[in-house]
Length: 115
Image (cartoon, rainbow, N blue to C red; front, side, top):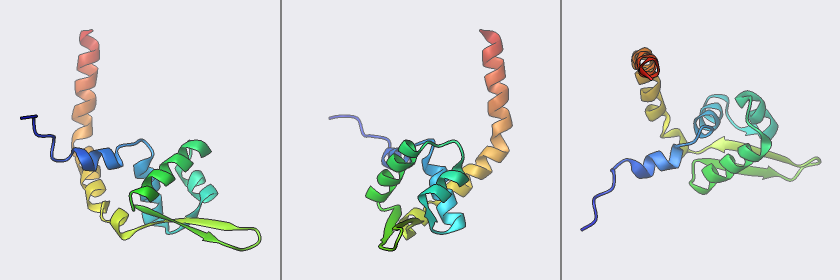
């Protein structure tokens, strides 16, 4: 019998990316955004990576893409209710980080000093 997988692996795989949380956070806190607006708010993400991340999130139902047939055409991205349901998880991680990140950094320094 194969070993049982980690019970949170599927959820972690879904949101594990350097860019997933900034995309979802910005769409949750700023509302629907056009591609260039989202890119500006995130900062150092390149267009190819942002496109890839948005497609990934759209495929999994966390973000919607709405095409407005205007001149010039306009596309907006928005977080879905399913994407918004991750907000408590991100809030818990933020709280954990605030409480424990200094200890993590101290452990890193101690580890690096031992090398």
